[in-house]
Image (cartoon, rainbow, N blue to C red; front, side, top):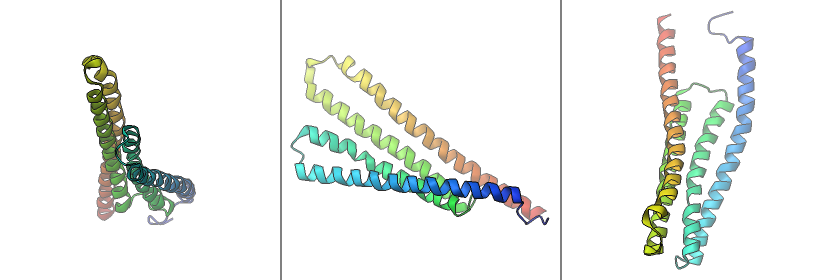
Amino acid sequence: MNANEMSPKANARLKQIMAASRTFKIIFLIAAIIFGAIGILSVVTMMWMGNLNPIVMHNCTLNLSYFGYAVTSWFAYQLFSAYASGNLFAPTVVCRIRWLGIGTVLVGIVNGGIHMLMLVKEIYQAGASVPMGLAISVPLIEVCIQIFFNVVPGLAIIFIAKVMDEGRKIQEEQELTV
């Protein structure tokens, strides 16, 4: 067997990866469409109902975060589309992984910011009737946990993209020296 030929074992594993990637590709496409539709419906609802009702405004603002989920799902769809076509280590795949990580970080920060603004608004509207330390401590911890569990995985995804890119470069250098 030539050094440039692919072994039968590797070919079978690649076919398994491609088949699983097709399934994930469909799942993420459906998720992107659903999250995008929910985001659009929330904007339409907010415009139709107006900003006068604080309950509707609160729910619609929280539902706007679904746009972030739609974008992140779209990046995952693009990534699994590349995997389904057999491109596992191409530069475009690394770029798509990086964008998936960036999207995850941004969704975490924006969602945390939205929840923080809603928390501040609720505390302001409550006035002095609730002790300030008690009113802010539990919800603030929840917001910080939400941000943490979105930002850290996003940064890990970006790091994995960096490692894959460096590994691809090392492999290309080794192929040139042989």
